[in-house]
Image (cartoon, rainbow, N blue to C red; front, side, top):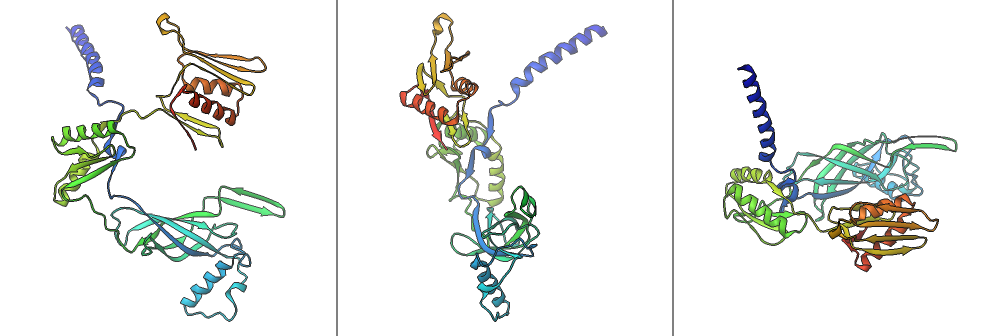
Length: 363
């Protein structure tokens, strides 16, 4: 009896192990919040010009950066200090002129703290150990939205003795965590009338339709409708509290994203080649300098798969098995020692000949 019971539990466990993966959501599903954003809910860039003080003789050489001395003179005059000499003649080594940048997040309110980035404008050797003096941060409209001040945190380090110098990471820029206080809020309209508009990160009619179907299935038919291949109108509650809860539910709905267009990204400066899974090649032959590439489409009816051959003048030959795809061509070229310019020229030739079934983008 015990043996039968054990067999029954074993069979039940096997059946459950087979059924649970089928009941789980598909692995390729993405949340709506990962595919789209709400129209009008965005960051706003802030910028300001300020002075970092307290440096250990690593600041600007004011004779070569007169704007640093002028900024010091203006700051002192606002504090009631009158200089008897021309500010541009000051010999200062412990101050540096900097630009301050920050992102004002949506729905930020006065009193909220945000991070700022401080970057040197002159010839300061390092901002390590410096303190940013109170600086207004302005938006694109010229209005002040935050005030920044605090100790600059620099992640690098450096040392010099005589003609020798050692530097680790970057010393001319740093951050001030929670270094700015919001002084003015940016009005953010959460929708227009009774509708909220979602904007996809990339224009795709198939993904837009899938998002509409997923929202309607979860929230009721007629809740969402596609305006175009990028924008989706969603009927939302009028009450603000209900609207926030409603959007929270929509953001976590799983949607199957449609595969994008075939694309190859090439960076000739670094020699990087990135492609997606939809990139394919047609039979072709390309000769470039002492390299030659031959892609044979094969005969699928006779069970013969495509074949790729790469030749070099020295006589080395590499046969790449499996399907005729760009990944095999790139791998073969790298094995022969082709440089990024050779690879870029070959890809451009394949694209011009119509063999590269993908969009080629050079960055």
